Length: 359
Image (cartoon, rainbow, N blue to C red; front, side):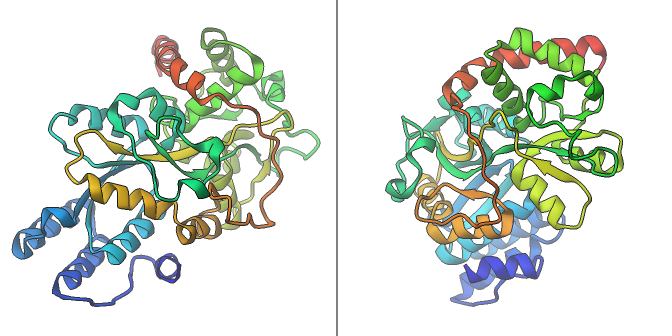
């Protein structure tokens, strides 16, 4: 996937192939996207009016991915298809809420990013779509109703500060996290803003066979009321020594370590979940045909290879060989539907506890 690699290596400069005047305009949009969001939207609006981008060449994507993930993928999709994409960003819960509020007016085509359990919990927002690549995908990660399509496999791991915590003392299992020596020293993001945090809570509930009404107060007590504003704060907080251990995604930890940061990673010995993040077509999508094209694109073989090599994300295709650098994980039998059915109750309990504590 040469163009995606070029995007990764050259920052925000994209391939300057010119197919026609309209594609030249698209390329200009790509350059503009390196500016602030407001400037990009203003310039795109002006260009769209000037060159009359037809409806059949448009797509609106809501994404909770980081820019470093969504940008090269969306740009490559634009160049290959000639479809212009309007990008709206935010947290998973935030984007889901915005999709719901604009559902009747058909304001969005695609939700891209967020754990599959979040899609199951809000499945009334989406319509079925069976990608042309279905037979090449890991069947364990497919929606029974085809309401969402997996993008990558994301195991949950532990991280710790090796300057302050020895290998022998570091937590090896989920049960270890509840030892008294880690009380108040676990980096964990607010479940209100981080979809991964809910996945972590749900993982513990299923491993311990414990309901949210019991697990959440118990874990909150172990956190000693310390909650981070964003999942992006977890690794820096562990590296700085503010917290000694943290819970995060494998891909996030691997990227941070590869960048030269001094943290260490552990795969939980008692198993972990590796549910996929997902993508789905929104009900009343104004450009549903293009939405299907985008889903086919993100699970294509070259996009999956690129995500593995550049983003440290495990592929969901069975015909993409996993790189040897990826560690062996003991996967638990994670029940996505159970997780989805408990999400509202878990969020209610979380809000009540954090509100009482003034967070």
